Image (cartoon, rainbow, N blue to C red; front, side, top):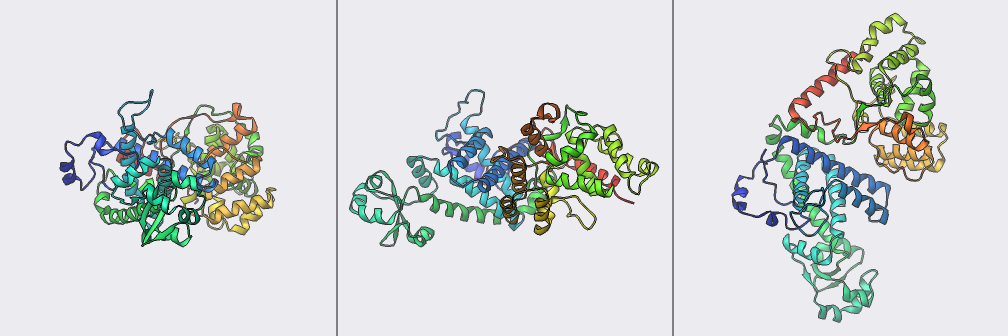
Length: 511
């Protein structure tokens, strides 16, 4: 496919070499890409950048930004997803890897794809701008002084570099006005003359020297100016993209994909397992207390107490149990034995509920093997009403009730405060990850939580039961919320997935 509105610019760039197009590892994304790409590549690039931005978000909340641990983890993720880090452009591939040009192309196109997905609402735009700014800050700070200057010149950010003679004459004033500088560092550092109105944040905090309407900014602070410029450009670009979005959404190939990218699950696929049947029904009670995420622990407790769950709870909990290894026979036995303790006799269960359990395992209806819900699916699903127990406790519970629940599970007061702070900041998955750390007595979980079955798998690894109970998964980057398979065109699979989930939901409706 070709990105819209680029025909005229394409003519101007005919004959441009690859080096001219991506001659710097960092850019302001001022020019839309001109490539023709397949829908499969469109989807792949979008998902991989989304994974990167979600990692940026998680690390920004879990660690102090720009701390050594933050930078190290971000560099690892950045490199593993094949985004550009090198400053020199070349077509040579690293051993078994991707060339620097291909990485820069990926960075460019993937940014514009997510612009289309995240320009739709003010909340989405705010989230996208914040993550892109954090990512830009990391990449800009990683550049050498020379490459920072090259970047500024290339993007017409024309701030004059202070000469050695002028630095020498202003040495004492620069030392007194700039934090952490000495006489030696003043000589080593590059300083930029910036109109003071472009550096109001630094002027306000008294971090720069002012003279004749210019702020003298050391190179370690220039990122503040560049970031403000980047934010302004990106904010305007998103507003323009939003205005032209109806034309893009009219393309029936793209509309389903863009609609789901904003809340896509981009982790491992927990519908494909090789250890089915490794869990016995007798183990579920003990596992719920030590290896279930809070949402599933809440559902299990409600089922044991009420001997019934409404359709939302049965779907969420049933698919989770399937994902951790319950067979169809075990699932039927589990639900039947619990329901008959309540107001449902065995005959009514077989007539009203057994079909839906078999359908969930792909043995009825369209025979689709349904996927356990991801965290985003749970968080964004319909909130539970009175008598419901599905959903995310961190998202859908009243903070005071959540506090009482955590207290009943022997979470320390300081731990509860940490969880509630994350909930207050609307970081629901990080709150669940903190719950994991508190219940497993570890300082760092060592993973970014985005799926209830991932929680279970990591818990079993940590508790030493991973060999027998751990669910093996096929390493894939398919998106559960993005209804298409990475290897097939988006439209067909999106429609199919939507129909299938709707079909499944209808079978779970209470009479």
